[in-house]
Length: 230
Ligand code: CDP
Ligand code: CDP
Image 1: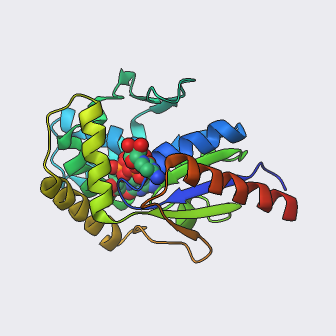
Image 2: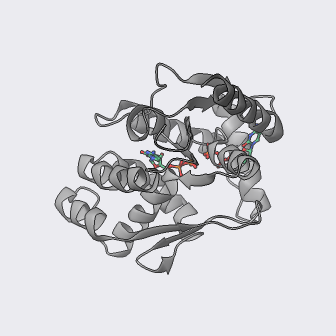
């Protein structure tokens, strides 16, 4: 093999991809790549510059010229830092405004081309756990382990509500959260370019009723099995 193994984790919003991917990476000494954070960072920049969401030319230019960096933090509880053009946008990319606009930006083919190219450059040597929507299908189609991580909409809304509570953010109703999750899932799965979809060779994990540690251990074991069989 000319590179280290790759674990690809795809799935809908709130399934637990970031949390689990980060723990799996820490356990196995691999790099964690949160591709959603990249689409969010670009969305933040588009909003900050006041570029209309449908100005695909201007957005394409920005996608090709901006510099996105993800810097790890040792502490699994503090977020991985996200930078775009030297702005620390770690918390700014999690606002409701960015969340409601990100799928429209992520549907633009020039945006995907630019960000996927960057992801593949970072993953050239392998040795990473990447999570997103198109990792197993487009970004790293030859990943050694592919997981499609899901949970029911109500469970995912409940998790998001807990996340907001813990962060001390204003309470959002479960109905509102379910509606926003469904809308984003719909947009992400029906777009023309690289829609959210389970790769044919991915293992589906439904995480309702499973703890983070259980999901993490399951993936770590799959990875170890795959290494001994290759
Ligand atoms: O964490 P959450 O599931 O809310 O979303 P995310 O992983 O941060 O991704 C935000 C959005 O970026 C998604 O709703 C997709 O529209 C887009 N995305 C994508 O198109 N492809 C990826 N590989 C990752 C994210
Ligand atoms: O990245 P994605 O949007 O798929 O999910 P996330 O940002 O990792 O958020 C999932 C939330 O559900 C976090 O608060 C986790 O602590 C929680 N959770 C989980 O990820 N996995 C479980 N099996 C149970 C809860």
